[in-house]
Amino acid sequence: MKPDKTIMVGLSGGVDSAVAALLLQQQGWRVEGLFMKNWEEDDQPGHCSAAEDLQDARQVAERLAIPLHTANFSDAYWERVFTHFLAEYRAGRTPNPDLLCNREIKFRAFLDHALDLGAEAIATGHYARRCASAEGWQLCRAVDEGKDQTYFLYLLNQQQLAHAHFPLADYPKQAVRELALQAGFANARKKESTGICFIGERPFRQFLQRYLPAQPGDIVTPEGAVIGSHCGLMYYTLGQRKGLGIGGQAGYHEGSWYVVEKDLATNRLLVAQQHDHPLLLKAGLEAEDLHWITAPPPPRPGHLLARLRHRQPLQPCTLLPLADGRCRVWFERPQRAVTPGQAIVFYHHHRCLGGGTIVRGLNREEDASCMS
Image (cartoon, rainbow, N blue to C red; front, side, top):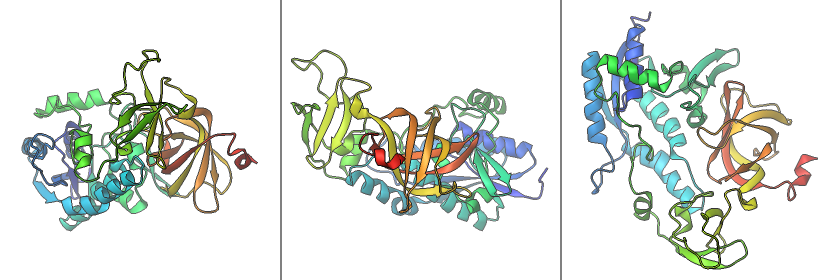
């Protein structure tokens, strides 16, 4: 029991953070909640549900009889997250804003504000685990592999983890919903958000056009045949199947088309009618901006596990550090849709070690020298 310690829970209006607050209260913490607003509403109502989320957060706070604070971190979100998000798209990469959002907003701006309000720790509804070790705080996978969110948290540092608690580490999602129902939370059956972190669910192409000018170009096959036009390379990602607008091509079978490459130099979008087209499969990758939660792996080839996207099964790989601070990674099996701008996150058993930003995919033939 921790009756003399205050913990601030980031109440988002969702069921996960609500149950996190419930569990901490049952553990004896003095719980307070904080609702973060991190995106200013625009002229398109219905895309960002901040008002509805705040109402749900208030209902949870009232049900638990805890104080609910509010804070507006929209300036910090714009400066620390969204400008990087736009810069990455402008450079032709596909960023994941949730990664920076966690490091800069949920575990920095929120943490600093909570400490200023007198809390000694913070908690969120992430499915992850914090573990103590001789090396420092470690980030470990949650019991529910289908919900594990360590992929999104690999950028956290020791100071952030020292103050962070993840009450849902041992709970599967269905058990969380059952606890919410038992507690009488109005959001117990609320669907999960799948939009951009804090911006919400909205037509992505229309949203991005407000900030970046589109540059239309040709859609071509790997053989060079022009079969359509695209609205701008930034709107497409490797492996994408839907939304290409090129069905029913004369001279081709009726199978689906997939984005297999983005040629930035010529502004061409390459597509093919094969889910596992050779252009989509990479034997390895190069990554930069590496971040390690505790000590980095030793400066020699290391056999690890990795994932290139949330919920992807862990992939056996070999990590080779480079002299310039980057690394090369080779997989036991070729990986589909290795996307520049996305993250590769490394694991050793249940531990999340850290990760980096994908620069490019690699083929064995063109980089055979790297294996010597």
